[in-house]
Amino acid sequence: MISLDFTVYQRVADDQILNRFLDPASGYLSQQINAGKVTNKGIEIALGITPVSNKDWRWQLDGLFSMNRSKVSGLPDDQKSVNISGYSNEGTFAINGQPLGVVMASAFQKDPKTGQRVVGSDGNYIAANDIAIIADPNPKYKLTGISTLGYKGFSFRMQWDYTHGGTMFSGTAGALLGRGVTKDTEFDRAAAVILPGVGENGQPNKVQLSATGAYYNNSITNGAPDEGAVFDQTCIRLREASLSYSVPAKLLGKLPIGSLSLTVSGNNLWYYAPNFPKYIHFDPEASGLGVGNGRGLEFLTGPSARRMGASLRVTF
Image (cartoon, rainbow, N blue to C red; front, side, top):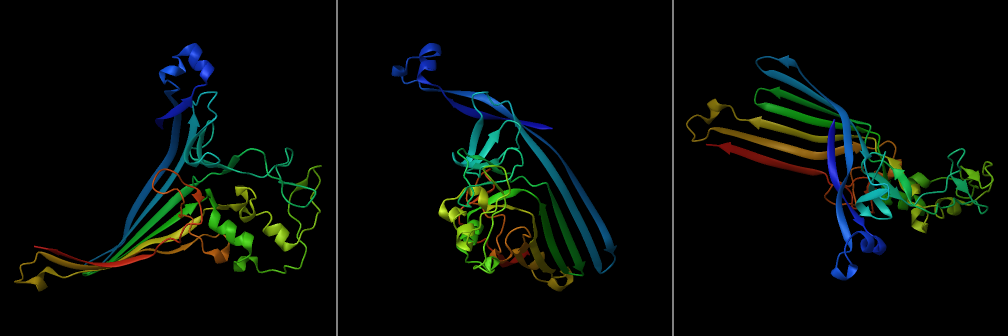
C-alpha cells in the first residue's frame, strides 16, 4: 500500500479571514493547507520463459500483468473535490471515496429508482443541473506480452499490450456520431427512433424522434451533456516490432570495429478498440490534456502516430 499526500488550495471567505486571520487590506486572501490522501493497492506479476534455446535458435517470452486500485480520502469536509487537470466543469478530479482522476463533466438527469436517463416530453434527454462523474479512466488491468525470437545473428521482437476497461470522454467519436458522418450511422434515417430511458413520470419512454432529433440533438455537437460521448477504453495494441541483425565478429576480422548491428523498427503499428464505434478507428490513448497526470479527456485531437525507423549501431 502506498499513500501519497497532495496539496489542496482552499479559498477562504472574507468573513473567515476577518475572524481567524488577517485583515484583507493586508493582502491576505487565501491559505494553503496539506490535505488529502491517495491509497493505491495493486498487484504486478512478471513471468519469463525460454521455450527454445540451442546453438542457432533462441525464443524468449516475457509477460507482465498489472492491476491497481486507487482511492482518495482525507479531503476537508468543505472541499468536496479537487480539480487535477482539464477545466473546472470538464476535467479530472480527486473526490473522497473515488479513484484518483475520475472525469467530472455535464451529465444526463437520471431516474433515482432505475438509474436510467430521463427523457423530456419532447423525446430528448434532460440535462442535469450540475456536473457529475461520467467516466473513470483507470483500467481494470493491463497485460503486456513480449516475444523475442533469435536465429544466429537475427533477432525479431514484438511487444503486445492489452488494456481492459476504463472509460473516457471522446470529443472526436461523439462529434462524428452526432453529425452522422461515420459509416457507423448508416441505417434507415427515415425510421422513427425512441431513445432508451424513462419519462419524468418514471415510465418507459415512448416518444418517437427522427434520426436527426435522436442523434444530433442529443450529441455534444448540439450542446448535449458530455456524458453522451463516453466510451470504454479496452484496447489491444501491437506496441512495437523490430528486426535486428548483428554482424558476426569473425566477419569484422581486421576492421577496427568491435560490433556492427542494423535494426528496423516500428511503434504503434496496429490497435483495436472493440467498444468504440467500428468505423471511427479511434485510438483510446489519444488525449486532450497534454503532458501530465490527466487522462480520460479527448477534445477533437489529431490521430495517433505510427512511427517507423532504422538504426545502425557501431562500436569500436
